[in-house]
Each structure stands twice: as structure tokens, then as C-alpha cells.
Length: 194
Image (cartoon, rainbow, N blue to C red; front, side, top):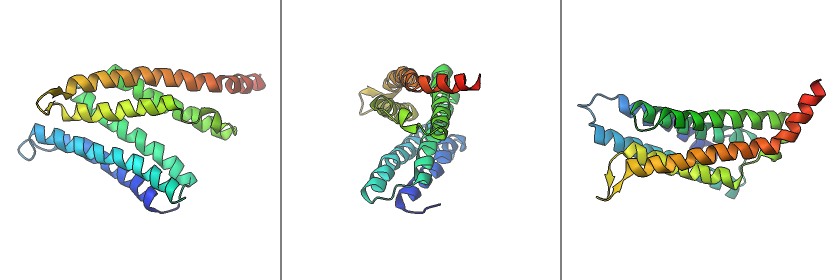
């Protein structure tokens, strides 16, 4: 396993996930609800920044590796799934939306793994649609974690819900896009089993 700054940042992101979740299990006298929301929001934002920064550094310093390419999306999916589960428990996110987003991540990860095994991973490489979906998710989640009025005017719950709904629509759309790209190979491989 290679060890460099980009991979260290990815591991840091994995380590921050339990903090986003765990802050909500602290006793209220230790940390009032508003402070929990602020702490979870800040930790999530730091984790999201490491997501961008580790990729930037890996490309800039030519430190990309197969292990980093594996660990980075796993860390992203764990971060999003952990935050969404907490938000469902706090009744800030509809469980159906969370299920769609998490379910899509699992399905597309499995599809990418299968495509890599048959040597066609470029067929389901990350698209701009997937990047827009990720941007909507990564903006919605901190807004929902914050769960308050920002700058005296922005209701973060309302805007977070809207952005998460957009992310959910883009999630389904991008899943259909990836499946459409992979479908000819799926049919071909299924036909070769007959």
C-alpha cells in the first residue's frame, strides 16, 4: 500500500466520518444541539475539502495509485452514507431520498467493479453529470447538518432539502446514464452465458 500525502488525506476523511456521526451521541449537557449541528457541519466540510484536495495533490505531484483510486470513492461513499443516515435519524431527510442516493452508490460501485473485471472500466468513468450530482449532495448535506438560519436570512433546512432533491434526481439520471453505457456489455456477457 503506497503512503503519501494524498492517501493520508483520504484516510483522514475516513477518520472524520465517525466524528460527524458521533457528535450527535454526546450528552446534551456536554454539547447543546446547536453546537452539535455546527460541529458536524464543520467536520463534514473539512472532510469534503480533503476530498477535493487529495485528488488535486495526487495529480499535481504525480502520486496517483491504484490503492488511492480505490480508497477515494470508498471514503466519499462512506462520508455521504454516514451523514445521510444521521440526517434520517434526526428527521431532516426523507428516508426514501437517502435510500435512493445510497442504493445508487452501491449499485454503481458494483457496476464499476464488474466493468473493471472485464476490462471496460472506461465505459463507466465518472461523468460531468456525476460531478454535478456530487456537488449538489456535498452542498445539501452541510446545510442539513447545520439546520438553522444562516446569516439571518437563509433557512438551511429548506435549501438543503431542495438541493438534496436535485441531487436525488441527478442520482437516478446518472445511474440510468451509466447503465445505458454498460448495457451493451451486460447483454453481451449475459448472452455468452447461455
